[in-house]
Length: 361
Ligand code: MRU
Image (cartoon, rainbow, N blue to C red; front, side):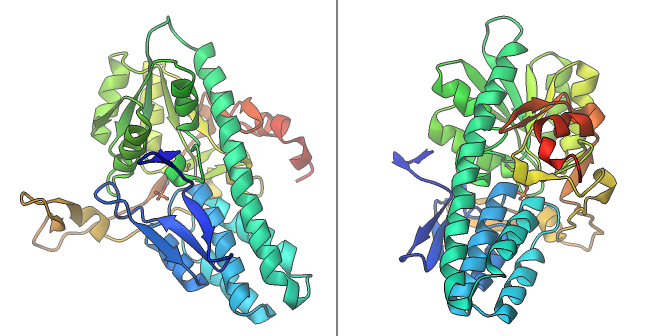
């Protein structure tokens, strides 16, 4: 994707493979700030504080985190500590554990002097694979959208959270079909759900704007009304974990949109690469849901009247707050999963048809 006319990925290696550069997503959309991470501690902190976020990107960042740890010290104790530190950062997106397991399987049997280079190459391979998988999701998703199109008018897509290139390495998951449509000259417009409390919808609006894709920001609660009055052709969201039976954990509020889409007879599509599918998790009840801090609800960030960026606390007093960051949408509400291997029903047989190598699991 291009930012200010420059093609870039959301993460890239620096300093002859001794650091990575990320886009600080906590600064967007107010400022475009690049950060250099050169230790496993810095990578873990960036994931924990959501400077890097989005399931596929978290996995790639964690893979680079392992490589940075082994650059500092390639012994078994460091490997175990790095894996534990990174695994503890965020619980729901399974891409994190998937990438750590892949790094562990690769380096544990290697001599210490080969570990850092091997882990670095593996992280780069995971990043490249993510780009290719998201590109394919874009193709498969666009085919699906065009097959279900009502008439020849502009495609009206509703999305929630940010599942664009910022949340992956490039292209995005839910937004990949949107970019594929736009780049093919197909008229498309995206309704962007604001996504309280962290406002990932603003990230979606920012990246769609940077690419020139027409879009409109809406309050989360406006989605039901738009669906009910027939404005939306399809809802597309990403996923943080897809269970083996097709249940999907994604940003909190996703389930409500799936319910509204079902009531309105609008297709509800979930786009996710293989790294997001957890065949070891039988159904959505096994997915851990991250509980985040109360301040995410109580403090908002934006521009003051004078133009300076700052924070505002919404309440002066004490208030009890619950902040579950994700919810689980049952596979029965999902019209199709879109993966790099094509589309399938959100069921165990559907997933196994696309990934037959998982049948014995
Ligand atoms: O808490 P976040 O911002 O990391 O959550 C991100 C989401 O829920 C995305 O929709 C999901 O990771 C899909 S990523 C392409």
